[in-house]
Length: 464
Image (tube, rainbow, N blue to C red):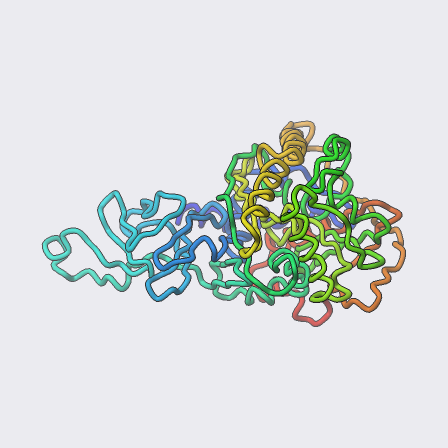
């Protein structure tokens, strides 16, 4: 309680600074937002305790008793399926003295038992076992009041599990708004037929010594940094063996930056002029025929939407993803102002042939993650950027987010596609920072708004 009181006490002073630190009219952001301990502490209470956060995937808890330990901000949580096959998310903390009741990453169990004093909990969160209940408590302890703390709301959207601690938060679908259109490209099967996807190969986890916001803003729409991946492009590293597939799909396409500043989400996309099926995935007959079939089916199931080639995106605040091969989900778990823990899930169609899954497994881990060619480039950038935010002199100089400000962009011809969001045609300009500005606009609102009545700015009917 002392920590919470301290955070709330300093909110008044910190909130007054947020407007100066995130100056969207000038297009500048103070380096302090990445390194200041008080701002970081405020994030835990104002942001991570109120936003919808990605927890895991239902395929990780397929059977009754299955569990997966995840995080919500700095809090350890348990995603599990109870005996009635209901999905829950609990705080991984015993109600007696706070010890973790689950110290394994994943598995199956009938109960969660605290190794400190032995209290045990069923998979529905109820307290079911208390040592010396008769002798020490005289059977007076009301077990119904001492179960595991559960999230206020949970949502299973196309297999992806989301949760929030705030009972006053809007529903998940209202929280994402029109961004649902772009999230579907990640969670749908490759053929667009609405089948099941699954997580395969486990979850990669590693520590990156930088603030969590650096990768979040990178994935939300940083086209500008492709010089960092020049070596990957030059060696022709990609699933087709002839370069990154997304480079092939960009040829002749309209480049779009799509932002939802009132919600903080953003993504990149390319709109192709036709539905040509590009060659690729030629590693074996089984693999090439599978993807050729899937891409033909996408044209049938998506219609004109099959022309949209989705790029990387971030669903505010800290879930980022790549929607096509590699199809991955990343969560940037904060671990102090100067560090975060990166988690990477790999998605695949559940009914894909074994040879296809094995091919993608090799490609995914060589492309993404701590040993992936592109991720190594990114991590070096983020680490140096974070270090450059800590110096006494460096913190006097804000970062520049002015790209695309005050410049008219060519109109976007979507050929009748009702594309939600604030869309900017950057085909000629090559890049803009509208998505990053939208991200920090929303971040500053969370850091200042007293409740969800103030945060749900879209309810005035003016935004998607």
